[in-house]
Length: 451
Image 1 (cartoon, rainbow, N blue to C red):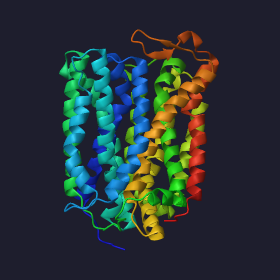
Image 2 (image 1 turned 90 degrees about the vertical axis):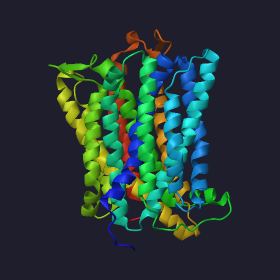
Image 3 (image 1 turned 30 degrees about the horizontal axis):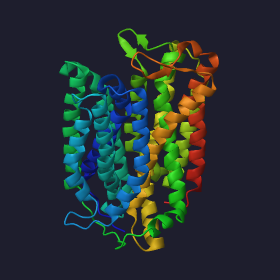
Image 4 (image 1 turned 60 degrees about the horizontal axis):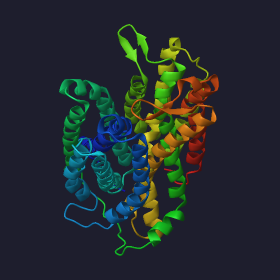
């Protein structure tokens, strides 16, 4: 095993890859796109919902295909880096075009939105799957893998915080119509994302040579199902995205229906984005701490179990906070403590995917690093999509009725918001994520690779 120290400059360059993908494009696509497509671009709610569903089904197919293609790449730049180097400009360009509102009729806009959104998903996969796989070939030193993964998470959380915080202020600075604001900011963030991705590809190094399967074969997919560590880690990855997906998606409802709107304290306004921004900063800090914490407890598996326990306990505690804006600082404290656990386990997940890739190479004789890492990105997309659907289902079971607003979007009828609905909203932010964290911790305890 290599014991050479890798420069901080290369680790920062690697972090820029997820700062671009996770901190800019994915953050904006998760937070701003539903509002943009309906209120600015002009799609109906039904069209926007169908678009998101089709895109998720599209990802289920493209992610593993991209992983398998990346594993077979041979070039002077390596196996995974060329996808970053040559995919950077299309990545930023398609993102910019997606936030542009063309002067077309309803049918033309619908076609434009579907084509560009699916193209964005394809380009995102083309860049992000090889980016994740790159961790498996930069070093065989386990401590360095943890450090690379930690830098990655810090980059994503730091850039995500900057993006969320700056977006409304940049809109005001740009001025003009909403469509003009989104078009300008799409170009700006697209250029930044492209530049970060290119730097990541150019300034990282592949030190290990994967053992390739020369011919494409469905045997690789069958081998995944026989790979017990991969099965368990995929379930863990899905749980992490359910945990975050529920909390982020329901936070707005919590402020609207449990706290009666934004909380004002002097000149300081606390809304759901501000509440979650406290968590983003905490995740960034404890993402830095994660490698040392892992070394202190002795293994990634133990560290993941402890981090899951922190998430479970603090989420349960949140449920018992009164639904009263007077307790907002206690809510912030509990969110920060929960984010300690999220910050600790987030870097571990990707480092563990690298361990699973090493295990697969030893057991089956060929490298499937790209295919294995593609399951991580697929879990990310499925988790966010399914959690949103489950929230609507559970709120409906609690008695909430959906009605169209002035834009045609489906919103909760205020008259249907009973104590049962408020309790369900509160539970979706606390008890249900706690249950997911318990399952996540149990799965981590069962993870067979004891590094």
